[in-house]
Image 1 (cartoon, rainbow, N blue to C red):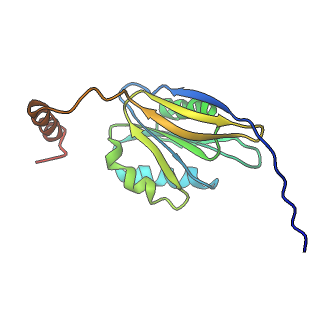
Image 2 (image 1 turned 180 degrees about the vertical axis):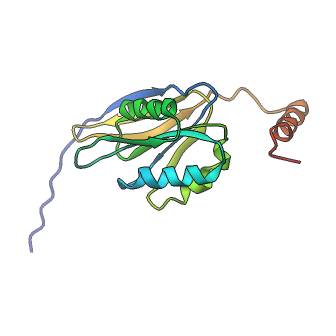
Amino acid sequence: MSVSFYNEVIFIEIKIAKIKTPKDCNLVIGQAHFIKTVEDLHEALAEAVPNMKFGLAFCESSGPCLVRSSGNDAQLKAAAEKAGMLLSAGHAFVIFLRGAYPVSVLNRIKNVSEVCSIFCATANPVQIIISETEQGRGILGVIDGFKTKGIETEKDVQDRKALLRRIGYKM
């Protein structure tokens, strides 16, 4: 039996994709693995929060390699498509939410059988670190928001608790 090894050095290019989130929206970016992701994510989101608006896009990574999209809001769907084209990364998906926080939908998204991982769920400015080879693109990581500035004080703790109660997440 003969075994041959093919060694090759492949250089990658690192890029930063800056995703612009529409006003009053949150963003979820993840990775899935199959074309039916679009329909399954749509169904999971539509069932999760009444009156929530959303748009989603999925970067297909074989066959025609298209950005596949869906949603119940034309503006958010178009924004997700634009973000998907900017990423153009293997099986990545982008979801924009209006009228709900990611905490209300993340478990539903994670339970979609095609979903492999979630990179971020945020309303912060986001930069996606992309690697690119001659074959394609992949997401290396996410910069979500800004650099930490310190440790919370007692007043910060009180403010955090007040915010959670004001928006209805704690009693």
